[in-house]
Image (cartoon, rainbow, N blue to C red; front, top):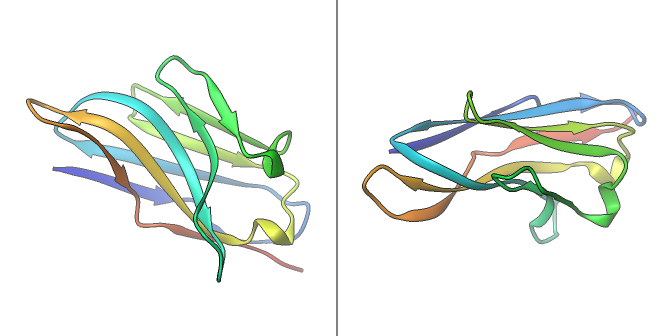
Length: 120
């Protein structure tokens, strides 16, 4: 009933920028928190950034000042602008959306993941 489609990953040199997008579709009644997580090889998945329906944001210390999360409620889309990328940002990035479906439950959904590789 709900699909999350991510785009924008790729290979970038250190210091470069990428913008990730995650578009939600389906029988959605209301969005709550939208966020981005990442998982590097051999590591646990970690929260990168999140944004509430009211626009309050939260960032991992490692990305503060470099990444910016935003949302376009009209397009049901959440974005992650990543600047000054470092090799340690290399990971698979997943969007996560907490929402309620029409006439149904509230729960969170995951995107399929998009690879971000920072390397020279």
